[in-house]
Image 1 (tube, one colour):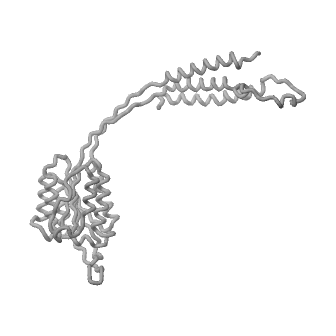
Image 2 (cartoon, helix red, strand yellow):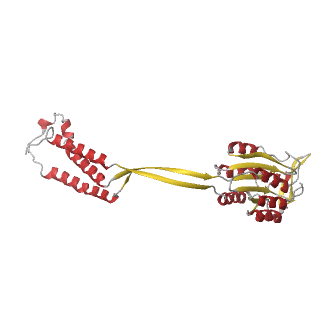
Image 3 (cartoon, one colour):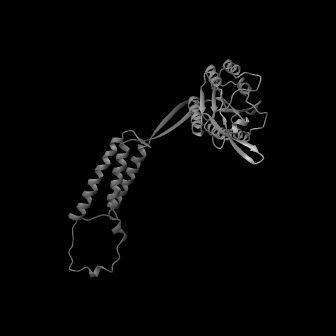
Length: 327
């Protein structure tokens, strides 16, 4: 509830001196009868009317409160919104080659990438999202869907070694493009994450980037891996042994792909920077929402006027019946 003229509510402060005047009047102007002793009256029970003797004054105060509120014109607003949402079609192309098991990100690159990608998907409730995985070959793990719970479940199941090892960036990008080729969305985006250089596949990464440009698809590329060397777990007859291996990311190619398509290239060296990259992409590709607001105000002052009349009638009735006093 709102008020059309809220400044009139300051009149309520005038009720404080009125109440003070009433208390002072009762103590000073009320007639008194002096008795030498009250012993004869101690055994008498107090009448309920004694506790209610201030009720007429309380009713008068409430009457004045209702009148002031009515003057301030209370209103109730009924509002609603119409949302027109333009979703974005997004394909996440994820490298699942064996090098993604390096542990410069925790617990390793692949698991860190899946966790951050899951958070990204959960923040995009209005978008169709697909999942493509690649290493030596590429495949679609999940087509474009608004069912993000199923997408995340399929993403969780991705593991290194599911297909032939290697890094076919061009093939992975081409498969992602194929998912978006027939999309009618005004905004089409691919997020490609890899930790290496293209060494497999029949499609060159830059050629795939030019294909994406032809279909109006922006490609955000992410190179994941620390600078220098990273600990990698090798299986040996004596268990898992760790050895530092060089981190080799073809940043020039990834940068070229993003430049050609109007996207951006990012480098993630740890979990924190990877999460920050996805947050930045989330801001760059915000869903467009057109909101139309409608509101209707309903006047409520007549209810307060009615309450004031009822309270005034009750006060007059009580003052002339049960609380009638003889001057």
